[in-house]
Amino acid sequence: MRMAVGLEVHKTRRLRVWVLCLVMTVAVVALSGMNLFSESAREGFADPAAQPWESLLLNQVMISAMTSPVLVAVLAGRQVDIEHQSQGWFLARMSGLGPGLLCRAKAVVLGLALTLTVVAQCVLLFLAGLVVGIEVAPPVALWARYGLFLLLVNLALLGLHLWLAARVDNQLVGLGVGLLGAFYAVYALLMPTWAAYVLPWGYYAAISPVAMADDQLIESMPIPWAFALFLCAAAALFLGACRYLDRAEGGPA
Image (cartoon, rainbow, N blue to C red; front, side):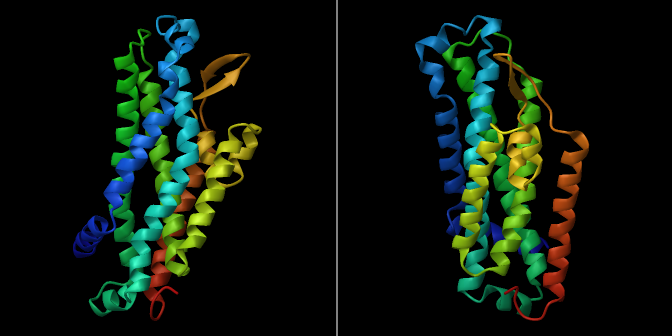
């Protein structure tokens, strides 16, 4: 496993994975924080009733729901496509690395990339709020909880996209699924609560730490048992798929 992870780290440099994560971090912070420079927003920086931090956090929820599914799909597709293009599955098996083990190694490396990306997005956006002069006490615990839940949803969907990328040679399929997932995640923020639990991408909306009620933003939480079941099912299905790939003859396709 250590050797497989080391190989995947080298592939991330060649595939510009870290550059993609950096670009997405900058995009999310910039789009989420655009309203910070408007006059109407500045007027409420010292007014708790205006909920400046909650509004900023809701902006991040919306932008993350729009961009995270696409980022996960692109990262998984790029990291797996190299195996399809260069007979990597066959060469790895000849070296004693089954395709399932290879997928688990990819999950570890891309999981680290997604972790750093989520942490950077949350920290930079939080610092942006402080720099522009929001005087209201920030909801640090609320922000940290959202960052953790966002990372968990990203990792759950990473397993799905790694499996899809391994099974289907054409990586446009995975990208298309990611784009459709992004549309669903955004619209799930506007639909009834139950809609967020119908498809995996709806959890980007379900984990929103704030929700609108009577023209005010109130604290929100996903249904604990549903969220836990989703994460456990995603982990079990990914590990089961990896075992199946290791037992199958030849490559994943």
